[in-house]
Picture (cartoon, rainbow, N blue to C red):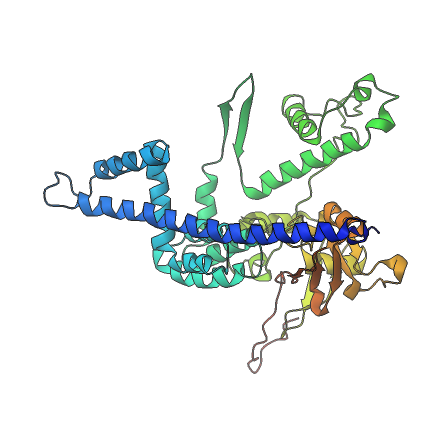
Length: 438
């Protein structure tokens, strides 16, 4: 393992990077202050439009013409179009007036701009009367993690707080599914499909697996195919080409097909990891289900997936602490790996959201150096962060409860708590004559 601090220029490097980090912190504070000031100024412009629009001398009360005029004036200073400024004024008012506690937390340095946008994006779908309640819970959650990590969790929280069931709202949204063609430049276009989340996730996963299979086997198959031998496409390019092949021809062009039967590449199917609350699975409620921390999916789809799958993972948690203590399944892989997938849910490097099913199980204390293969010494890391742990001066140790403590080359520590358990049981007093729950 290499250590950047042991190089001849190690001291100079540490001095330089320490100064850069201090400058970044100072710039972030100043940027936050400027961004908040700009939002407040734009929101004030919107309020002025309301006030002037309601003036008795105005022909039309709350006229949109007043807002357009003010937007055009501001646009001249900001060097933007008046349409863009008018849209930004509306967004600023929603943030400043609708979610003031989030702005205050941002101003105090407790959260960052990305957190505020995630809170507003999720909370704005709720009736305005619930914004303050949602905001309070969301801010507390945001203080413990990065914006991209909490975004999916905030969406789930907002859906569960909504007075209308998620299933009802999903049915309405699904009616808007469509495919759009957006012309681009240089003979290119964007083909955009609006689909239910679980279907879109499955499509993308299958394309990704097929693209990786092609890229990973180029050298092995180069001697058998002139096409493969000259293939220098990136993963994104292969994914796009396979997408077109499947839609236009039904099979990937480079697959080993015989007659109408798809070969190994065409046989690849998508993997989608879904967490389904027991009450939703049984039909007791129609709350949203979690697509591994990414976004919610509708309960009907989750039940259908549960009914068709050959993989069952039953999780047991301590009813008091909520900590996972055991697991079983129909198909039996390593019980330890199943437990870790349930606990970690994603890569355990701060801020990373790569799903656990696409990560590697890493020995926190290297096995070659005496680390044991036990739950308290294992955690999921994606390939990128697994390599970084091995080949850079970043270090990690595992504390109780699956908490990881990362230390940077500068000695800064970043605490990575275990994700919120997917399943938790709350003990309730049994009534006389009640049957046993299991």
